[in-house]
Image 1: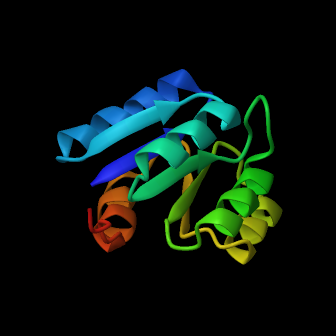
Image 2: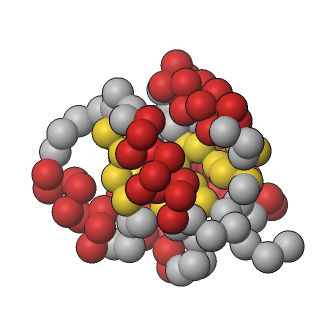
Length: 121
């Protein structure tokens, strides 16, 4: 699968990318909402890991924007804050799942990556 990570936390993003790549997937990274939207438009990933807190946008607002353009691509919200209100908002706005930092890699493999269907290319 081709996946996109949009997260300004470079260390966390690199950890996630490394794990996903070690499990046979391709990963693109963006550290701002603006760069993430460019990658999303040009590369058409199978899924997006989207941080709730970005330097140039609120991840929940970006989720809503992405879903208005593309209802099919699964968006997995990523956050370091255990904020139930944001998690509930994310699901109401169409998030596929929510992944908390530090990552639970077993959950990532079985409940997230294991349930995403690659797009036909």
